[in-house]
Length: 257
Image (cartoon, rainbow, N blue to C red):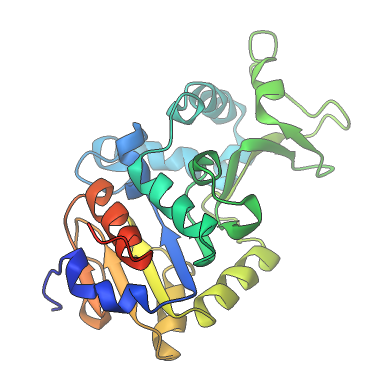
């Protein structure tokens, strides 16, 4: 197993990387008050049954599940969350022109809120900020749909009357092909691939690490828990993400902390 490293240990690697591709998971947003899923205090750890709410077929077939999910979306902490130090550090890298891409499994939009260019963010699991009609494909800003919940607990599409859901990827749904292709290309064409706050247990997104590694690209893992890729990583950092990521960004930008 790769021994736990410190940011200073990989300073030369980061300083020499002109094109960093970063993959982020739920762990980067916990400091912003958004719980992760699989961690010790994760949503599914504390309530395993809640995972069923993220199943596409169940959602489409059960109006009661849709009503529960809409209430959950209305109360989601993403609406009041603010970017934390790790989000801001990655935005600094983007502004400096050092990010090849920022691939995120998160749906909260906090990378864009921190200042990372929306064109550089690849949201492989979609976004909570838009709602899609499963009938006609119409997109609606989520706040407009949530505003109807008092009158309509399972709000239907105003255009065709179809079932609507947040524009996120549920279990049983395929990732959008064009989005996945962009992520694969970003993993294959960078100088260093950095995975932050993700268990690297869910495919095909976890497989982006394989694409980087197979191309001889160094992999850096920043995660409190072990991942399946730790043994193949150039460096594994276990310290808190809110401390590690700003330090890594500082080394990459030549402003060592």
